Length: 315
Image (cartoon, rainbow, N blue to C red; front, side, top):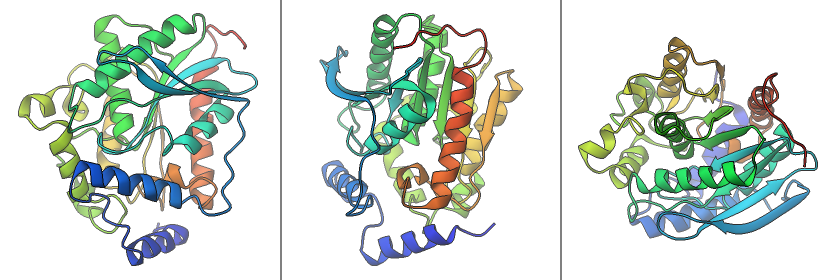
């Protein structure tokens, strides 16, 4: 189907305003630009979705305390570690605040958003090590509740890598993983990179720069926790919801990873995104098609966290 007309208008306005591309010189400049863009696209009348409790704190990390923001709805039966997107270089607790609020309420889960260390100052595996430390902390902090990982874009890549790391390290059992337009192929060899690599918000040039900051060596890029699409042995990973967007450079690698998980015997729900672009979860309340598809994605995630056989405890 054609590009959603609301997103076509969004892309035109962003281009006219000089807001694209995302990468702006240095990492510091790129972060500042992304943060300003994330806050501005909510609009002047934006009101945060209400959540019963939102608390900022820290958890222990391998390089020192790590900031977290915990969103708890009225009836939280599960716990979700959320890892934000931003090419492993950008993003923070504020840029993804609306997404975390939506997940908490829609899924009925305590969502703990992690402000992990960023590349290039802290390339792979530092962000993954931070996520692992946070996951272990949550397993101790919330015993008896289903525990899951979630993320968008680079954060989805981290979530998928964390699920694999946890399986291999004998870590806490994960009830599910939510991967929203994940980055799974550092080679950038999929056809959608060529097909959607220009003029669709995230560009192929952006992704090449992000990978150069996050995984600059062949050893880092070839780690199966990064090169997920080519990683061997996907059996035994937690059930997954994989969301893709039709006009995303990462579309094909998201589809490919969902197919590889399914072939390995992992239960997978793949939610397609016809007419949508990379980053559509950030346009909640602004683009009707993004709102509708995000609710479908989160309903599938909620179903995984409420399936029979999981331990539950309210509060």
